[in-house]
Image (cartoon, rainbow, N blue to C red; front, side, top):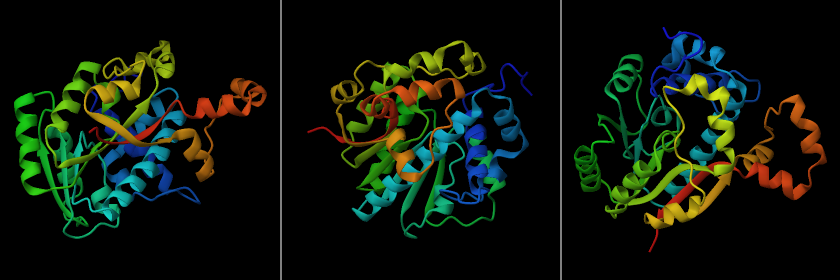
Length: 286
């Protein structure tokens, strides 16, 4: 096991970390969602990582709000005619087991082999609610990625691409490559991805980020919308953490030292702070 300074040994460990927060949410008196499989997948190591990582309570809040946002996006797009989800960097996501999905809906999970093997082992015998397949593909391998996208495109015509908690760990050039690759396939109708302004960079890369040195955040661009537009995508909508948390009644667990600043801030300033990050629903730019 890693030492206490580096509980995250590899980016795949973040899947254990966030699964723990999904499991904890289900144990609340009034949870925003229930994920009965998350704890099974996260195990003791996931709990240890969550206890050891600094600022875990802030990450937990983010994971919960983003889960609600993404669940809503997927439900909306299925109602509009989507016939598949391509979950790139799927981690320990359990949506194929817990969401109300059409039985013939196609769900493709892509990640590192060890993560997929863990899911296959821990969830063996648990029926998915749709047609679920798992593929071990290195998304940095352009040839393998192209073959994957081509295969999915042969089997589905209205695909939701999901990259939950994936893009922040990629360098801008890697995100650009992925965006262009997805854009080459007309069946990739929508892409659900992290929205994050460069204002949050100091918070995510400062001294406290030493625990994340084996999986650092890399994707910071000054013009998020311009970046994606330049690579063939536009935001149909962005659901911001601040707005969603207010709607859901689950406010950010603000540290005590920050409370006076927020109380003195104007309404517009507080709103701007709440819109520094969230999740975007992208669609191809014409």
